[in-house]
Length: 212
Length: 212
Image 1: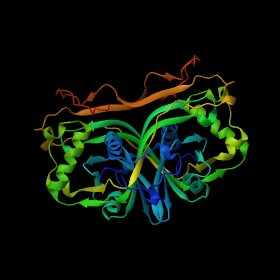
Image 2: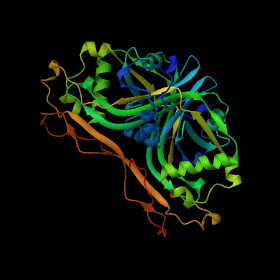
Image 3: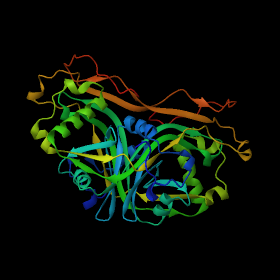
């Protein structure tokens, strides 16, 4: 599917001009995200758990301990909301109310689907390794049968929801002009610091994700 | 309160040794977070919306357009789950299943409380400006009555939930040793890039948050 479906629950009411439903935009945001927030309803209460998502084609994958409440819930097929937000900058205006942040976000809705076959689980988990460090999966010990059995892998179709992007300088109106602070954008991005190798490890440094 | 209350919904089941409930730890994470994810239940469905939180004393504040579904929901006092996750590093191990990420997270539960008095709303919103850039609130045009009326400010007591912190080198076991990739931690942090001032603005550059 080239575009995400618009449904009542995924209609953008606030600032719809910031909305995007084309898969290229959505996928770029999902592929950069090292953290997503999974929302589900447990005994009528909302629960939001952070975890690392990864994408394979038209599916967003999540994993965790097989007995965790997040994974049990996801694997049950119950409706979840998965949200990703990348912070791109602080937007500083003359007026308090026009301060903002630049961001790229995706909100997806759907029911999870358990990945059951050990070979499918193994392949999916190795794709996550390659998200952390491109090309790494062939150089690490792959999951064995016991590890696979203790780990749940769940996927969600990327087909309902939307992306939202803010990327603009701060606005100002005439009455703001007497105030003269610095105005503009402080760009923010996740950056890697000096590597911290395990003591004694002298292998060549790892490849880093392209967005770092 | 010095510690967050432990309740059935906030009991840490997975890896409880990573849990923290002392307010100093919780507050440090909340104060660094420029994004939180608010989960609520709408017509029985989970919805997770990212927004910028800020803390004043024992309360976590959120704001938005007064008519937005997030703010209407929060102001109603319905139960919400507010989650913050700060990504601190990629943890690369010899074995696929021991890869991880370092993080600091907080999960809070509770019901929102609308801040109604215009002076209270104004003071709270100016505290958010000072979170974006310390000391800035006195140099910007404060919210006027019309702006305050169009904006909802809601607060949540910081009293139920927990923090969770992972900060460890990768583990390994004997059977991993034949694999010899680079192992260790790739530290990650949000960093500021070159400032992008509005054209013509020549005021001195803004103060940045202490964690940047």
